[in-house]
Amino acid sequence: MTTPIVRPARSTSPLRYAGQLCALAVWAAAAITLTAPVLTAPAFAQANGDMLRHVIRPGDTLSELSQRFLQRPSEWPRIATLNRIADPRRLPVGETLLIPVEMLKKPSRPVSASVAGIQGRVMVTTGGDPAPARMNQTLGEGALIETGPNAHLRLVLTDGSAVAVPSNTRIRIDRLRADGDTGALDRIFTLLQGRVESRVSPVGRGGGYSVRTPVSVSAVRGTDFRSAYDETEGKARTEVLEGGVAVDAGGASNVVAPGYGAVVSAAGLVVRPLPPAPYLASGGAPVTGEDALFDVVPVEGAAAYRLRLVGDTSARDVLLEAETSASQARFSLGDLPDGFHVVAISTVSGDGLESARSVYDILRVRNVLRDLSAVPTPGGWTFTWSSDGTATPRYTFVLSRRGESEPLVATSGLTDGAASVPALRRGSYEWRVRSSRTVLGQLVDVWSPVQTLTVP
Image (cartoon, rainbow, N blue to C red):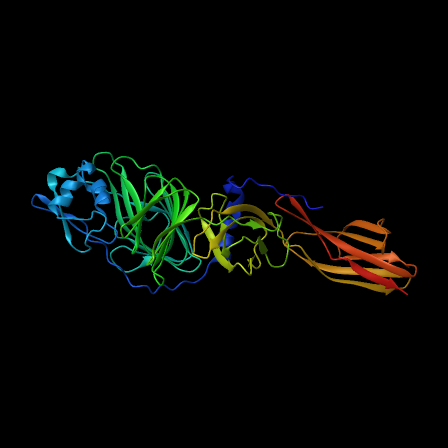
């Protein structure tokens, strides 16, 4: 019998995976050609005389700008009066906002983010031509990140916050500064296409974190959330896993709680529960077939399911990402190498919201039995079979009369794919073979389908 493998979903065992990551990166890599246009860095506020002049960008609100620039953010009505602003949530994009210098915080200083993980070909533009991203590369304001199919980048900020950029995404760092008074970080990312995942450390006074799209702003002060934008649909999504996220879209706003998501489109802002997380039908049992197949237990209302092969159970470094329709509910990872792998799966609803992820620590052991046959020989019968797999197999052969539970023959420890028995009496028989392979100290058994034999 197969020994069950039970792993805690949130434990981390980096040493066990280290030997596999290089091979998996080669196995999962895909060539990427990025043809998106190069975007220029944003225009930042500049001081002029006794006023700071800020060019209003899409998504700017007076509340956010006051938090960013003013010593006392509660004095925003003075800014509204000075600039003749009737609606502090609807600022005229492209016009200049005037802020008296005496109201400003101490000058902030630029900081940088560090590239902590790369999968596939990721391009970064930092004021010139796009170039491949590099491990430990530092990125600052104005950097444009572009990932292609099956590519991924992870950034780490100086306060421990992490930003994961999945495949097929374009995102720009518009602001990355430390407050001149407190040192708290103020960060603004503009998501132009695709998805981004943010794990934000608590934000101190003078700091902030927001993800903008052309139609929405999601601002937090410490949380775990995901953002997405589809430029074809003109639709943005925010999914909250921990904490709370303030979502602002064209004057409509809402604080989205954990387990909920916000969808912003031309129809407005709608908040809905995230779909339920899915489960693997196998329950995380070893994957033994010729193809590494993962069947998903259907979730009511699902439109699709998303699978990630990740480096460890923290699910930070993504090696491969795939999506399948709800009607298919199956993933095939082909000839996945033997060993331990971490798989994270999620549900995608009809409006594009993604659930929390179910994380599985799975053992892959290719162990396939085929070509089973029974041939009469002088004085008896010879039973043969073959099998595929990387580890050395041991076989068990079992033969019994049809309808009887006690076997006539049960031979274990076979190594050459064959078993012989003396002559059999007339009647009907059933036989099968078990293949046992050990990978990374785990014994995995696979039984063949029951074979029938009729002796005339």
